[in-house]
Amino acid sequence: MSIITELTRMWLTRSTKRFTFRKEYDEQLPFAECDNLGLYVHIPFCKKVCNFCPYCKVIYSKETCDRYINALIQEIHIVGQQYESRKKVTSLYFGGGTPALAADRIKEIIDAIREYFIITEGIGVELHPDNVAPEILRVLKNAGVTKISIGIQSFQHKFQGILERNNIDTVSMRNALSEVSFETVSMDFIFALPTQTYEDLKMDMETAFSLGANHVAIYPFINFTFTSSKVKPLPKKQKREMLDRITNYCKEKGYVRNSIWTFSSEERAGYSSMTRDNFLGFGCSATTLLKEQFKINTFSIEEYCNRIDAKKLPTSLTIRFTLRQRMVYYLFWTAYSTKVDSRAFEMFFGVKLKKMYGFELRLAKLFGFVTEENGIYSMTLKGAFYYHYYENFYTLAYIDKMWGILRKEAFPEKIEF
Image (cartoon, rainbow, N blue to C red; front, side, top):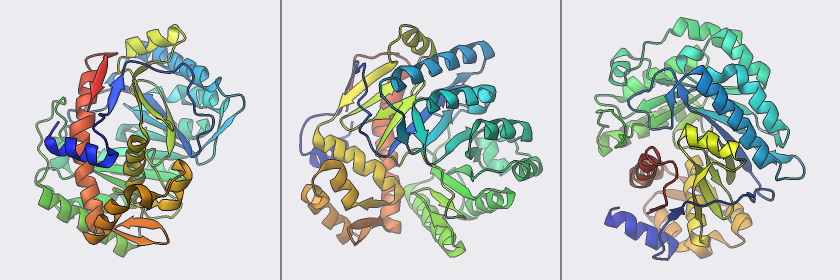
């Protein structure tokens, strides 16, 4: 950890206490009283592992996938049975991996979840471009899926080559999306790739909307230390110019900015599993954020299944927050939406935002990172870029280290930051 990371942590938490994750967990998860609760399910199977992808995934085999899905459904029952009645939740998202490889069992998973949870804002599933076929889309829609997110990364051959991705049949994709409709059709892109320009990114976004997308996400390329990718992202100055220009372009087009990296052509279109006060995660590597703790499941499919067979939660690590630590988590992930509502903060913590971070907010306004109106702090273009910049820094300082360890150890004793 760098001295900057250390000092930032100590300043924001007003303590020298580290973020400490330990090999422990609660048999009973205290989610019953959590408001704005989201759900996430991880399906860690792919036909091919992309060299740049940091997420928990393995090469698909039907036998392993079926065993895993059986365990996943049992995990849902173990957690869901802890609450006496059906708990209202905002949303359910399936990520991976490639969840569509288990398309024939998605309804089974959703049905298990609906035994315990009432989903109010829809169900989303991530798709590989190869999965965008009418027969798969119909299976997902009949299962209750209302939103899809397609991992395009780029429509352009030169960047597909860098990312070792295949060319995309845009005609077939347009036809499939026209034949089977969803509330939200999101397409993901990577920006800040070597030699990439604003025009390249704009062309990708225009293609997405022309094919039937009503929502796009542009994620910065991050070179995780444990992936096999040798790609180096663009320098900071070029990243900022690209992000600022694409944001202004979207504003001129009348698109809605839903978060730091997402834009939609329709007000109702949205796709994000991140902007939740609390969430429950099911499956390998899935995380759970509650009022006073954060936990992450084991990355090992074998150990995950073994834990579930023993009727135990598959948690690998848990951090139990101090109040200030939880506030930092809250503000960091809430700010992903580009806004922080001081009233929502006060309702969550029972204390005024200005009392806890008034000095930092004054500095943020002074440096032009945010504006304030009626207690709502909104990021400027400058603030959005620096959020992105420090999110990238946080990812490499914290997530890269944790995921790197968890890929090798199913249940490490402790990780400190």
